[in-house]
Length: 405
Ligand code: 7TS
View 1 (spheres, rainbow, N blue to C red):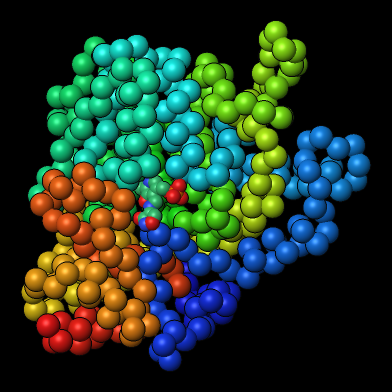
View 2 (tube, protein in one colour; view 1 turned 90 degrees about the horizontal axis):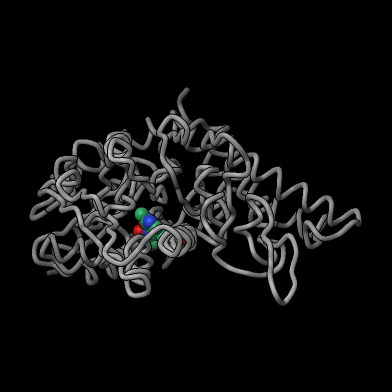
């Protein structure tokens, strides 16, 4: 099936806007995606019809809201093909999901000197939580290098594995380079040494079909807002036997079985990890976003975005002084680039005046920037609602700006 982009764009009210008198060209989808009307309306509908705190009330609205939240959990379960809804934990985002695992895992599974393997291309969200634990529990971080093309090599990971390695945590797709990492092979490698693997799917879950059972990953995290859902909601998938083993992350209402001042026993999965009132409005709207993605079909989305990626890469490379950062054979629809000696920030500001939204800077990946020997990049990241015409506007915009320097 071919996607009808013109019709799809009508589902996203924000895209019809002009900024500075120019049609908006939104190419910052790796930071956050825009929301279809069905998601926006779902938020309105929950507040207008069933709003009540969940799990605690016997009354009608509370039951409806609880059902809505738990239905969303099932929708997420089915989207990533988890074995059980108990393995789906609602968090506030990919960042909180990683903090949860880092805290609960290191506290219960690690002793001083134990090692966690990360890669150089990680987002700060997959670096700092481990550093915080390093300072608390005395673990050490081992970092896989990136090659010139922006890839990681399995042999480099294997070289870092030791009897002290407790976990490997890496991005499926780099938010800077667009590289699609060979996670199936990394998971297999980790498991051959009995090491669990966490996949940061923040940049892949909206582009690539994920099957956590086929992948056999131990943990997988992502954010709703990067997959056409609302902000403030994220997912932690964990294998049931891992989640059973790990202690709670936060304490509060809902995550308990019985509380006395002397001792507290904890609720069963998934509630053990969901302290306090969860964002049942956000979770319900995430369920709606997943239905929207599934209506289009992830395979169709992938095919179209690959087409856009190739078109944009080819066109950008025709610009004088263009340097694309991240040239892996396996890439998602993210292109980082530099043009001549022009500072990314200056170029980004001027493109903005032409109505073109791209991201500039280090993209929360400073260690990667250091490894590449650069301060930052410009980044265009595409979603299924972007068009070749928008790529052409970007290319013409860059040429126009470059002439000014
Ligand atoms: N992991 C990756 C690979 C990411 O790209 C991001 C956010 C996160 C984790 C954190 O997600 P959050 O929703 O919890 O903030 N990436 C970006 C970006 O590239 N530009 O803005 C946010």
